[in-house]
Image 1 (tube, rainbow, N blue to C red):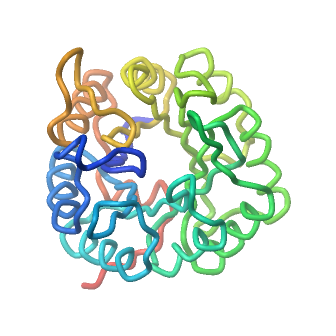
Image 2 (image 1 turned 180 degrees about the vertical axis):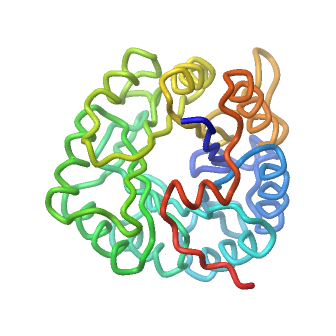
Length: 278
């Protein structure tokens, strides 16, 4: 792999706007963030949406508005989270596909999530997989545990390849109670990947951000960064804008002679359907 897919996850569902005012939560802030992060080297954006009170929401109109606005303003691959927050009901999480994103997240199993439990039973995963195939949306398989790798293989065995024929996964490491953010854990997961996987990326939560980034690059993987996963740029210095994290990832990738991937190459890598209007 000669180039690096950089995904930015700018918001998430856990942080409060009151505690982190620079967190992008409005459509206007997300569009501004998307533009700057594309300029810094990102090729895909992973979105969680907030309502007028800056609370996590799966409101269909807001999802569609955000997807359309970012698609109009940038060439980024637009990926919507189907995780929402840990409190969202499973049936509502399936409605994310109605917003016609290029990609959606598909977490491959239930996991401990700090003091909460992130519920992803087999029936939900299977329904989401099939509906994504039918809607021609490319899933990104989120792996929080090594057991999730086996669940991914089970999904492919049961339902065949996803739309687009490519299988891209993201290892989410360092969540309290889940897979640790270490090179050893990441490489154990990579070694278990089924042969159908065509590309993988890694996310390091909090202070595992940099070690996991370095491990992923050295092992041929891609990167996800953003304020959803990490709000500290360095000890004592909070991230002020998501493009800081994207720019640092791009700099490290370039130093490793794996410069940031273009949006066009990212679309080919992931097999996404082009929904942009001429």
